[in-house]
Image (cartoon, rainbow, N blue to C red):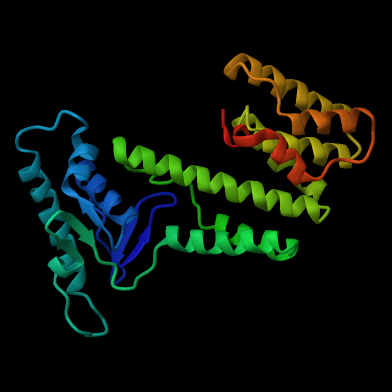
Length: 277
């Protein structure tokens, strides 16, 4: 089974889609796909579908959705071109004592691949291999074709999962941009960073990266304008001043002195650097 959630939901068995069109079964499949090869408790599925006010028939209705998914899986299993050891739909969508498990049978998952490649990129950054880090993180980010589960109606559980995934994407993006800056690609980054800071209005790391890219491109006044816009947004939306690291970067640009290292900028922001607008 091959799973894609970093964009539209796509789940295939033997190359055949088993993704339903009805909203509720799609939610069930999406939650199972995000936790592939792990048991998803019945209670979690019910909360996803109906929140804190499930109907009395919730368990029965959930079983109906599972049967609908198994029908799709059974049709896909009939088209096994290899004629390998037969599996049934119940072998793929497994009932367990506490819930249900989607058995991928060693198939692919774009989330797992993204996490593997991003991890390799982070280790390359730690080792000072900036070309390798930029390459690995760029390849990891290329797996994203849009927002996670962009075409799935989300309840409480999926909402939390998509937020978590978006944070991991943003972290990988931060690190890829830092690697590119260390490689002197500041001019190539200007368009991308300008777009990103307009989307994440209070994200300090991205603003600091844009300030550096502008300053290194000889656009000092624009770099200082970025700082002022960020400060205004932070004060208005969060009641916070920019971090110590970002203030040091601003002073360095004002004095046209040597810029502080990017990791010093990030360290000065603490956990606020992960905030998004």
